[in-house]
Image 1 (tube, one colour):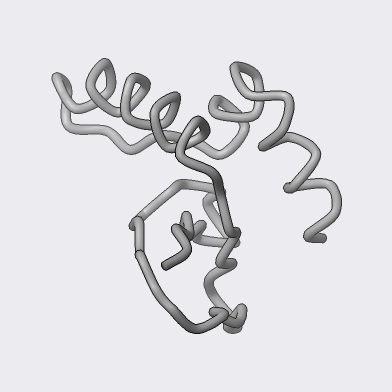
Image 2 (tube, helix red, strand yellow):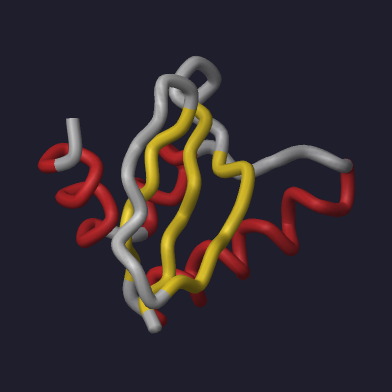
Length: 77
């Protein structure tokens, strides 16, 4: 099963995580990016810091702490 981070295109916020056995496709409003367990761990760490004040993690914030995620964002344009 693969893990996907779902990013709202207009705001660039990570809105959801999905584990799926089928490949997800992008929609008009959202991008689905397949990520590794290491990237999920970094996302979880950022989310714990953000969730204290009720905000979501921006994809750019995750890209700054995970060079591999940054590369996926660049390739997924």
